Image (cartoon, rainbow, N blue to C red):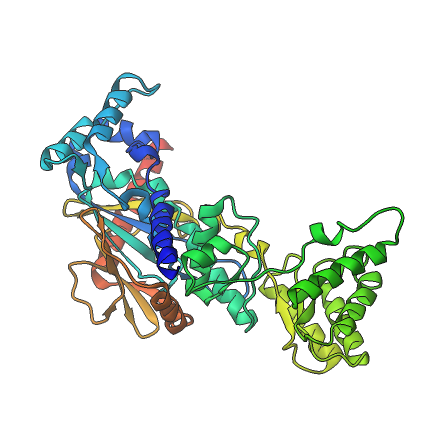
Length: 487
């Protein structure tokens, strides 16, 4: 039977990442302006170029301190590189774009050059990708991925690569939660848009904080070494015994008792009627009725959860019941965990070792591009650095073919050709359109443990600093001259 599991698991993993690949293998999976732009300047589109992906902001949560954790390579790179493109799909895309689309433009020179360079039906994009390996902590404002190859082709990747914001945010949230509690703060992930993003989130959460508990059975089957399923009573079962010819308390007790009798373990959901009266009485009654097991605890997820954790602990202690796990939910985040723990310490006078946070919704809160201001910018063409200027602080891109190194607690943004005294942090992720990064998730989680809190600041290398200085001087001079003319 384990052999059958392994075979099925392998097929499902392949399908999982394949579903992130371009819909139908369609190379038009990008912004329309990529077609119009590179059709206008084919020589620029064909030139060697460099692009960087930068998370300009960190999470505005206590403990983040400008830090982010890299995660998500397995799914994010699969969007364009899980398998090669097909010649027939590229040709069909060209016919549609040039003859039928509402905006009729097609960068023919770019795609025809690519097709002429390879003879097979399967076409690999001549693109290399460098970046932080999974689990690497970095600072907001520092490029986290770098792309090299024909600029017109790299440009097509922008929408997909900007989606790195999701696993990066989620891995960082996992670390912040780990700082708040030594308990594995997780139950379900119903807020996920779909099953695929649910699993990507779980993997990022593992990398960032080694979270393992989940109610996603598919995730545990796919990665049994990473995840452990956890399940207990839900409201749908708790209310199933209700009728008008019996009390609500009787109906609630019946379902609690039947569950424990059959399963031998439970986190009793006590807020169906009222968590601080009817539910409290029923929970204590069920626990006393089953002396054969000490694996029956409490789950609170509405009302004043800090007060309820203290209430249930005290009532169980007064009843002579041994220490039981008390799960607390209801929009739990790291700050909530700290507040509940602190309240428990003040009221009870001991460490809240029995309190267990369940934090479903936290992992999706503010998980969007604007949270980290993910930016994909062209930084070089041929042997010339390029810069996107801005009137807003922090939005100016960094020019050159970039690599990142560390010098103790400092991250250095350097030119690839530069000789810098430091430890290189970028690794090659994609080589000529083929994914070459295959670290295990355990290795990535180990790196997050090693690097979180290591870096205090970042700076430009001498060559990159000189590039930016010259560009800034040019901009200041030309803006001043233009304003003089306009006045």
